[in-house]
Figure 1 (cartoon, rainbow, N blue to C red):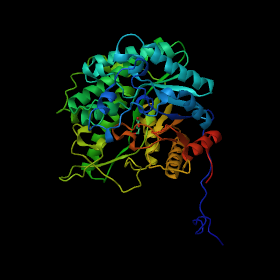
Figure 2: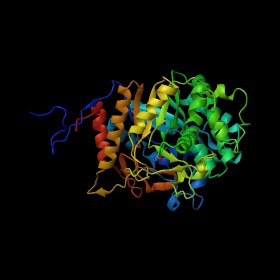
Figure 3: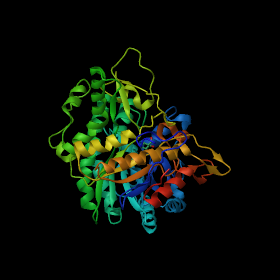
Figure 4: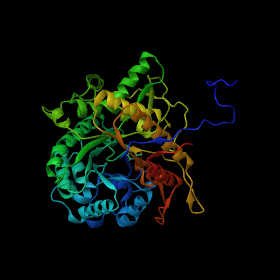
Length: 478
Ligand code: IFM
């Protein structure tokens, strides 16, 4: 007699059940302006900090720049046709600030704006919900010259820009994200210097973080007032579960510190209206938080309609030791002011081409944490994806590792929904291969392969798989 509790006989694979997502689940793909548009000087666009940075020798791998990128600016029609082919329900893109408001102040640049109006209209015509991010790292260079994000005035300039764009597109775009991943803007841009503008000054990074939050808080009501229809406004954070490598008190404290800098620095002001006391104490050698003025935190905690979460991996950390191994740029000590001595530990799990450990359970944890500890607002995974080395063979790109990554993370997203998390949508990163910041074009995240010489687009097998997932509104049994 067979025992019902015993595992399946050898050679019989347990079938994974099909998973249906809730009706109306928003299936999307995401990109960002500097990573795909190119046309760096077209239509009145002026330089952003990423133009300056990428043109500075030694800053980006192989001297790559976003001058041409995927030339999306000139290929809008055919790119939207590809989105329609994928069956996307939504497309998350960012507006290039220096394209629509060259220099970062003054009136709107009609030619720049027209590009986004055409994009939005074409999306709508194809039944694709536009999702607009106002700031995905391309600060107009003159604003950096005037002090950049460490300067308080930049927050006010951002709110003006938000109102300009909302006044122009608020009648047709429903979903708005103010900032994408302010941790990166603050701590990679001004802490480690691995991202534009390439400054390495921990105190400036902390001020930048605050002024990004303040800019968000000022932009939310400005945007709502300027839009001529009902809009849903949120912010996108790149969140990481932070796990101690062992149960030692030292490792637990390392995890607390990194969690403070990576997650709570942003979540607490936005959703609780305060900075965590332990974080401020950890940062006391770096900043006395004298840049925080009365009323700032109430401004930052402006009521939102949704929260966007970008999830890629987990941080596993340990207390300092004398010999810390070299780390990828985003784990360099200068990204973590006040916690420079914490060690990031690799667990030997499979990694992507970014060297990021593949850990879908971290997505469930992150979604549950935000819901249980911070907010019952609708949540969206506004980015999730993986870089792998892809090859075009006989005109085709087969990328089973990326399919497996998406599948595992969508199973995790479904698990979170089943546990009660109000997750309303998922955006694959990325629609197409693109300029991966300091890595230039050497890392490919796309569901569409881009040949940067010919600009030919090839749908990868992950793109076909995602299209089928959208069509089914869920995952098939395997
Ligand atoms: O390419 C980036 C994107 O711009 C922001 N989130 C992470 C992605 C992969 O590194």
